[in-house]
Image (tube, rainbow, N blue to C red; front, side, top):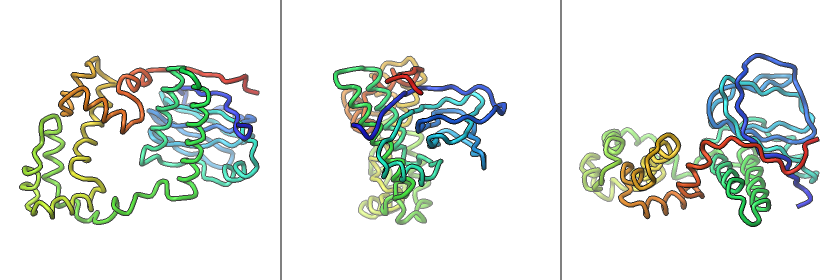
Length: 272
């Protein structure tokens, strides 16, 4: 792939919020803020950074990244295609990864590097291409715009306040749909139709989303086994949880746990 050369994939922790001289380098740099807060200073402006922010530093662009205990995932690369260079140079610098598309790509890249299986260099490069495409989609297209079904009927969200509270309190248990229908004071067909119109997903998908969020927290922050996490989050069985997690996140629960605490610097070649 001559038009894209990957130099380095790295986790960084920024601990010093004090200003320093701006610097530049002869490669592009994409940065995803995994945790904490900080900022990036350009010659003409300063951007505040928070968890979930993703930004691009152009080749030869003077900048300074700083933070107080800010953890980032960074990719440094060179582009040889003039059209792509033009698109990157004309794109915005900072995007909000509301749909977590970019976060899922970073996790797949981390997973490829951790496993180092056959063709992992090629697979890593492929995921970086997806990251660049997704970033450009956020900047130029509708990457950050919810689908129509996700925005339709948002005014009806208040109809399901009791339903959402019930799900949040009982996600670790078996939730019977008839109970949710009763809480909504709607007919069964009306409940399903209005819920999807309000939240963009079915009630079951919403419940599993709540369970998945809690599972990610436990995988990263606890010593519980994967089977224990599956039961604690209401998935019922280790097999179903692992299959659902892998389908949704793109990596297995075990791989997710391995990469969450990993701090590494993977060099593909010396950086100029």
